[in-house]
Image (cartoon, rainbow, N blue to C red):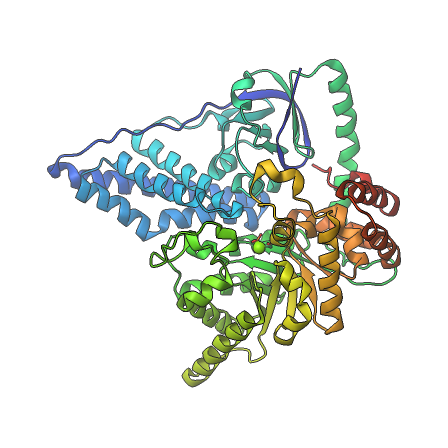
Length: 584
Ligand code: PEP
Ligand code: MG
């Protein structure tokens, strides 16, 4: 028996047989074509593109029928990459100008894009690289005439074990038979992870070498809740996991039934639970999970999808599409949160500490045009739905003053042009830097609302790089200083009568729901999949009990002490509290 620890990305449990998928990372040799064959090579590429597009559209239809529009959006996103004329233009130009073979040009361009995405120190976006690699695999398969994947023809339930999986591969599997994933690489926010959650397939990623440690036919336990994979388990382990499996099933049914009920504590405090998204296509899934609106729309994808700065129309379309699917619910749009190393060719200054450098609002101030374009699109979108703007990484009031002056100019322009907009469009500030939590009362003078971005707030408070796995043990919301800053921010905002939400990962961590309610937080913006659990906690507790928990936690010295205490509080205050976070 061997026990492997990885990253849990989709909860649930599978006990059964492993199916090891061999890697398909074919190396495409550089091959040149004769000039008289160039037209034929371009036609071959165009034919492959059309056939992959058709294949992906059929797959998107299938996902739409099986699990809904939200998950299908992931495939629609992949199709939009295929449809991007800049992408095919670049590939065709390599075929025509460099006389590359269709395979080599395809591989060169797509791997180049995947490399750019991977190099972005932003986990959400760097993981889009596997979407690009998935498209490359499909185009190459079409060009090389390789046979179809064996995974669509399984005859028994299996856990798929592989180095990596793309979203289209994941979507095209026979979901009656593929019941779990265990992968060498990957992260929580990859599209494969999102699809696994949508299909409710337990999945563990980041297991290192599982694809070589396991043989096809081995018995395997995939515990997607705890991020554990047991390879060739003994009888004792098998019996323990079978019991766990039976207990979880009933609880999941219960959560599903309660999903759309409002979240009000037993003593009458209403808590709004919103969703975080990156793509307009994710809106329907968020609503399905019970979201009351979108509390954080990360817009960087508009730039990173194509590598080219989006036009006002691109922005506007993304916001219009989101609003159309939101049916009157609110949408908080965060302006570009890009770092110095991922924007504008004009900006080639080397930074020793990019996360302390020219990023987010600082970058917008240095290069105002892309910011102005985005704000103008947001202002125009405010005429057609409930939109708010949110500024990332603010650390000085001057940044707010500047952003507001840009917005005033834009509104004056729109008025002159006779274009409609909401004059009362609200502009909010993210609290991601300790300085902002401390002087939130000054920022309140120029902020209509606040949202605490704990992912960055923790990194800057504890001086721990949020992306450095080696420092993961030091990175915790349970550090007393983090809790103190959060309390300070909530109290300061309330004193000034300004609403404050939380949209970092901490808001979706069920261990902190009780103390956050206790500190007075009444708006959470979280990953769609945890909305039902947060709502269940809210409905189970009294705000007065939560206040006691928050106060007791605030008096503690050590993160480990805080965590132990919060675990027992959750068990004590919430029926089935120990089962939350364990479904599948
Ligand atoms: C945060 O920092 O908590 C946040 C929500 O922003 P991002 O994760 O996109 O940096
Ligand atoms: Mg942030």
